[in-house]
Image 1 (cartoon, one colour):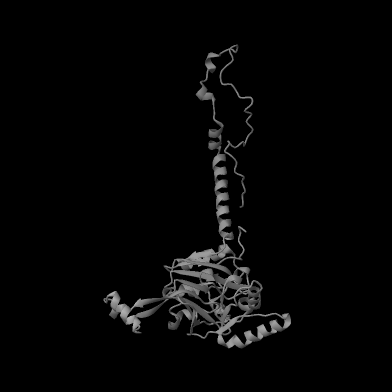
Image 2: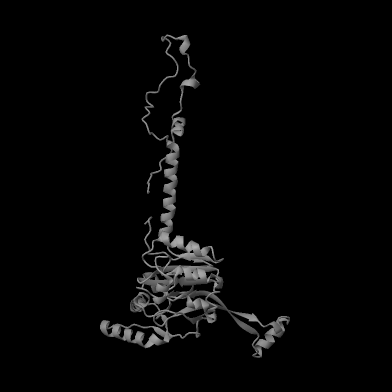
Length: 362
């Protein structure tokens, strides 16, 4: 039940009218006779209106209404809040099964899939396409065109190698129809291959399992670490070796964020995907959440059921897990209730991406 109250400066609630302009005198008038057997003290005859309401339960009823109003406001603020902050990363976007998926990480200037090209994605320099379904790739021409419109640098778009030729044809069609330039760097990144985004950041593709060719991506931070055999050397000696051309450091790749896109849960059982399951943040799908849809149905359509993630929870080594791509049949409250089941099975913080879903508070 939604109860809306306007909170004004506190006054005693006037459940019954109290006429303060004509107060009742508790002292007898001088001319009034004083029957001896009807003498009452002030404490016996005066009843506080507040105490009267306390006794009747009106104050507790109003307090409960105020409490419910505060809970409603908090819940609504949560519904309207956009974006997540996890492990030092800002994560935002939309992911509604069959409608649109575009997950943005401004820290890396990247978007995983492009959905219908939400305006927030236009500022991102990199786009990682997981597969060719329209709810994941449909907005790609608009994304490239919008960056050109705002005089932004042509973006770098990563795709599975098997769809690169078709994506190029798609852009040629739009160039021809619109008589416009659509400039981009289209990169076919195969499973296991690595691409340097900048000097301290690389991306690698990993295998996923959808009904059409698909792949996920892991973004790694890159740092240099002095080799153990040089660790006790003095600075001048190390500098001398470095100038002579000796490689004195090892390159350390640390998985930061992994994104699966649409997939069955089989990716969790592939040892080659271990980095996805130990990245600081795993962004993965959970299209179906309850007994209303079977695990077998989810697998037949190339998707993951929440029950499968719970079953394979022992393999999750991430610090945070973002669940996405829920079926539109679910409300935000359904999603949060289901997600709590996984949270009890893993040490990672589990958070659903619920922007765009309906709520009883919206």
